[in-house]
Image 1 (cartoon, chains in turn blue, orange):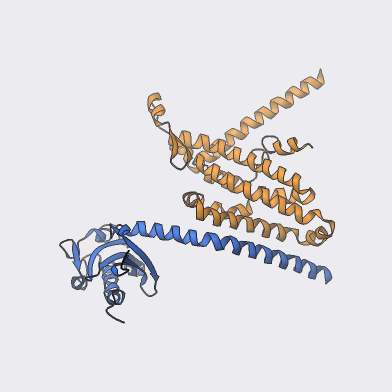
Image 2: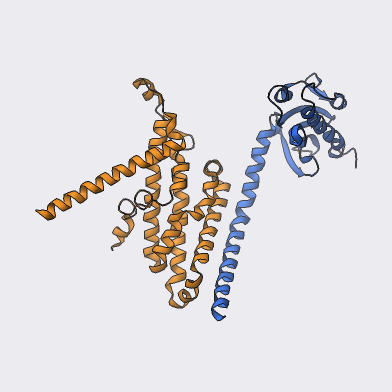
Length: 179
Length: 220
């Protein structure tokens, strides 16, 4: 009994010391890791918003389709000039279509990229390259919900459409126009 | 055993990879690039030296030793795992590209037989300084071994030698001059086994020759 207690105490002390040490190291590496991750994300966001370096980027984590919002703020005034949405919605075989959608302060979609669509070979995989009604290099917010599906890849296009709809319901909040 | 002998035994005589055949999985998996070997070597060096030191420290005092010995295996594992997680966090923060390349093999250092083997076979019964020297020698021997494997694999498989980051020696021109292309097989898993086996065969041949020479001298 005494031996068992001693062994337990040895492990308890060791676990406590090691836990403290890990917490200490984590306290100074975690901010650097988070910064690195944000840098990598910002680099990835340039595919939908090329001059992202001109803005301060604030990340807001969300749930329910929109995974995160990256608010691009003016470096001096701090006003939100654009927002990039990392959004996902069920597509083919109920596996999520993942997209990045950039919207500017005029609520105009200025860029989008399908990161993953799980589409079938052929039409499904072609979907990300299809122009969904871009006008003058921009996809007008209202037109985003006008198309129903792309023939032959209905489920993938449903997912893409749902992504745009999710952004449409959220966008006003980020630009200060709704609850 | 002198300090010098203790340090250098890990290089050839008791090389953890080529002689005792420990830590082979990561050695075969990450040696597709010379740079990976250096990174893995640094990580293993840090973990092995410190784990040997800590294991020796907790077993050097007879009273503490008596308490630790019944639970020495979990104690060693906790110490090694802590050190590996520290390496992992530091590497992710400051050496991100290497961290991504080495991937799962960084956390798997916890179960690298060399680390645990040295703790159990050496550090638990020796003084801290001796254990540190042993750990350093073994880690450098391991690093040297994986550097040799990766040297051949990357050179023959890709025609390059990536020292660190952008510092790369490109020898594809030499391949073109000779009229051959790099042999992709060497950067595939089969190439790892091939090079590993070849180097072990060379070492065995040298050892056999040495023993034969000794036997001949004794017979004379």
